[in-house]
Structure formats: C-alpha cells, structure tokens
Image (cartoon, rainbow, N blue to C red; front, side, top):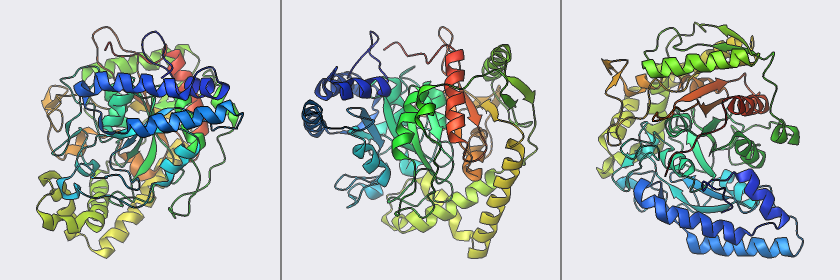
Length: 469
C-alpha cells in the first residue's frame, strides 16, 4: 500500500497514484498484506483473508493501467468487507455458529460496485453475532481489539472494519448500521463512520434481519475517502426496492470542504436526558467552542423528540424473527440474539404495522427539527471504549448501567429509526486519551452537504489522529 511515514495513507491518494501509474496496485497490495500480517494477530480485525486473489487482481489492474485503459475511481484501494455481507462463494456466518457453513450464491450489489470501481477486497472483517450489540466478539472468531488499547473493544457491530481502518491495515471498510453499527466503532476507534440517508445505498441481496433500520456505508480514516466510496456505491438497485436515486455526489464535493463560517448548527450534549461521562461532556464542549471560533452559528437546542428505544427494539425483534427465526431450532444461536428474536414472537402483524407508522411519524418529527438548521451535532457515544470482553460499559457518569443495552447508544439509534444521514468524526485526542466521536446529522438527502461540512470540521480539528502501533 502507498504509505506515509507513519504507515498510513488515504484511499484517495492511493487511487490517484495507481491510476496515474505513479505506483503499482501490486505494491499497494503487498504493503497492505505486510501490515495485516503484522497487526491482525494482535487485533483480530480480519476473520478471512484472500491474499492470492487480491495480488492477482492487483496485477491485472496494473496491466490495464500500463495498456492505457481507463480504470475506476477506487483503483487499487484495499477494502475490507463486513463478514455478515454476502459474497458469492464466501462464507457469511454473521458471527453465528448457526450459520457456520452458510455460503451465499450471490453478492451484495454494493460490493459489486466497489469491485466495478476497481477496489480490491482483501478480506472479511469481524462482527458480533447477527451484528447485534455494540461490541465485537462471537463464538466463531473471538473478539476484535481496539488499536488504541488492545484491552478495549473497538465497538460494533462493524468493529472489525473500524479496527482495520484505525490500524492502517486498509483505508476503507464497508459496513452496515442498524442501530449505530458504523458510528459506534468509529467513535471508539477514532475514525470516520458514515451512515447515509436510508435507501441511498442498496442493502441487497443479503440478510433482512434489520430491514426497517439498516443502512450500508463506509468506515474510513478521511472524510474525502467516504465521499470517494459513496461516489461508487450510492444509487438505486433492482435488488433493493427500498433504494432510491440521489444525484448529489458531483466532483465538487470530492475536492472542496464546505466553509464553516455562517453555517447554522444546532447542538445538544445530552438531548436533555442522556447520561454521559464527564470526559465526553468536556471534549464535546471544547469542540463546540472551537467551532464557534471558526464562525459557525451554533444554537443549543433540545429537539423535544421522545426516547424511542422501545420502538427500535420492536422493529428490530420483528425483523430478525422474520429473517433468522428458523435458526433458533438449531440450538446454536447465542442467548443475546435468541432473546432479540423471540421477543418478536409477541408482535402481531397489526403491531408491526403500527410500529412502522410510528417510525414514519418519528422520522417526520426529526425532519421538522432538522430543516431549521444546516446540521445538528451531538456526541456519538456516551463513553469511551470499554473492556474488550464486556458487552457494554459497567458505568456511565459514575452510575451503573441499567435497562436495555441500547440505553447506552442513545445518540445513534434515533437516526436508524428516522433514516437521516449521520456521520461520526473523531474529536481531537489528547495525550493518553481514548477516541471520542462527534456525530453530525443533516436533513434527509443532504448527504453531500453533510460530508463537505464534516470534512471542514475534521480539518478545523487538526485532522484524524492515529494510534501508535
């Protein structure tokens, strides 16, 4: 992989150098696998690697460049894909012993689009079972560890992808987000996690366990790389009837950050009800003060939208019952996931219809609030990464965690319900500190504007810090 002195590079720089012939895709792959072989035994980000195939794909790409052929936007970029995602002929276990031998015969259209843009998939990244929970452990592949502190979780469910990007194994990981699963690990690992507007990126073919809540998107170490990936994967697909066109990724968004001065931004450090750790509160307030100095027009605002974890859980349990319910008979589904699925058995068809109606009303309420501003910012998470084998933090703000596990992800799951675009970017990291994310939310379909603003904010923060590994 094309590397800087510290061993990191961006996808944008890699692709530009491969397309121009300044470096070879083969050398990019060789460097990527050297780093993966050194670091993956420590962090367990990848649970499957395909070095021989990736090297062969790189050599074919180099031959095309040498012949003067046109190559894709992501030429030679090493990519990790989430283990739950379908690839024809590849195991897709979803981190579950119940699916240990499942091999789909078709590929997620989003992965096909990455390959069509000449990205090169180097392997599959770890998940918690059925992508449920904000950690990254399962009985098949074990736990993924955080590159900032190997004794802590990277978060989940796209934890393997976030760890791989944070460690510089790959510049891009493709993931999904049904309740924060791109943004939680992005916050814990100090990288970029982008959940687009619902439907902008197709999610099929694949599992339907989070159908009413799930979004596919990238984890990257630079906002411009998220834009680059979106330019390849966004757009409708016949395979996903919920997918929609969004023609808002012109090249201008790929090259120019948005000016911060004059941007109207609402902010809330706790949504009026969320308990957060003092460190998160302090660093969030420091970020707000920095943005004010940059000329951002900030307004403290309480959206006044009720807590919605019960609605989220009702939809999640019904969706997972419909998709994975038959697997319970195997006796191989873990207790956490089994509880989620069996909770759906008490939900009638009328209950589900009412829940979907409530989801629509909830989304409309958020849209009414968000359209009064350009963007809305919150902390991404209530706390920093917790111990690697725990399923959740023990305490937040000095008090024991109580209630449903989702109660410690209260900033993220609302926008799975509402479908609004949301991104987590890292706040500045002091010496010895762990990463904390800033979540930025935009009105529906303002994806390009959100990415441009996020890029400008990251630049104002001084860039993305890297772990010393």
